[in-house]
Length: 548
Image 1 (tube, rainbow, N blue to C red):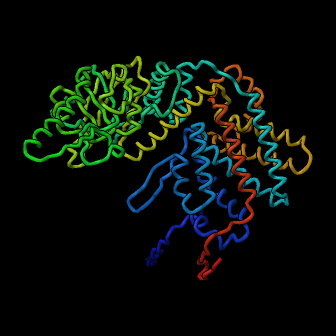
Image 2: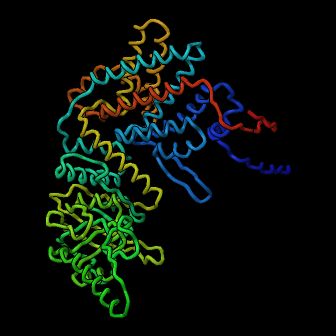
């Protein structure tokens, strides 16, 4: 029997992705070749981000340290890591963040289209075209694309329940547990629309608690004051149908600080004896009692304060009258409380009038373990369902990482619905618009003379690559699906005009902003001729130290 030769294990070398190497040490390899460097970065970024297109996107695992990691499907989270050492990634991050603030969606499409435009420009540079010809062709293609979008857009003034849910569904995987989340988001949007008439994404609070399942998620018509607690143990912790007051300034006698620094009652008393001290204490109590008398007379049972400074004597009085006090609420929570209960933020407690008070259907404190051992508590303040203009979605998931990803998807869905209700103009989604633009621009490029036609052709190819990547992520055969859509583009557009929600719709304004932002960023990168460093950089390549 032959002896078996044992092969020793090879030492595993330290893994260093090409993208990270490029980001950290560009100067030695790409001296006076700025666009080549940006092209290499764009090529790697395109490979990283094209998997994030569509509702069936794949996630990314970001490792920030030895014990810190993040699971995400949000482009901004990945760019936030890459932007630290690379100006191109920082440009993409800033523009993507601005796009999300403006229209709420389209961030992934923006990054993928921008990188495809830069890759297309590289092909044209290799053919001998100048940057002027490339930019001229891209500009013509952009104007033509915007013109086509205006022609195929359909206005929808009224959106039914199923149509609104369709706009929400496209941001979640097709799993049974996420259908419950879609229904929750729809109910929250319905309440805000009925009471406020329009959707402001900032008025829908999204919180998450690790533990449980996604199907355990719920929404309440009101506000959750997270990691907060009722001041005294003997104060009521659970009440229904109560009046709410919202104040900004402290309730205390100001002895040490000037009025400009901290609000309150400024008192100057000269103490010469024990009797004077006793009279001073009585005077303080009279002042404080007069401050809260107005609150007691109006039968307020819940006092919410942005300040933490409330005198102990005042707290004992409020406790005596059965008034619950919650201190140190944030400005954002104060705004949400005002919208959900109708209470107005008043600077000082003595200035509260009948019209400044709000109404809470119920409020309760929920404790999670002992605060001494890391436990937290939060307070739920429910408003009137017929008048509340803000609500809260409470999400649950098995782990903190999954929870953060679901929260991000919920916020994206709310922003997308808000811009859809504001715009009311829709175009075909799921890659159809990109392929329609590709076919139209390809035909249009043949009618243009000169080198600009090549720029228009590359712009159309960038749109084609987006549609192709999206169908690949959906699990379909990209070649068969793409060729079918391109051949039937005219019929699909006509069918969409008659019944928009037969297909997955996209908001016209989002598509336009994605095209404009991508063109602007790609134009900026193509125009860069060289990278200038403030400090000299020393890089080791092949054992040799190169200083540039």
